[in-house]
Image (cartoon, rainbow, N blue to C red; front, side, top):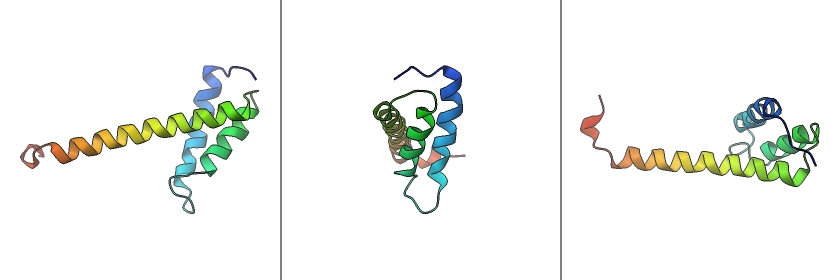
Length: 81
C-alpha cells in the first residue's frame, strides 16, 4: 500500500464523487465505493484504505448537510430576502 499524491486525490475524488448522480443508486451508494477502490488501486492504495476514504468523505458530506439543514430550520424566515 502506498500513499497517493495530492494530484492523485484531486483527480480521483471528484471522479468517484460524481457517481452520486447515477440515477439507479441512492446518492451513489455502492457505486461510489467501488469506483474509489478501483481508481485508488491504480495508484497503489489498498482496497480497505480506499473504502475508508470513500466513507469518510461521504460522512463529512452528510455532516455538512445536516448542519446546513438545522441552520435552515432554526433561522427566522424574516431573514430570507
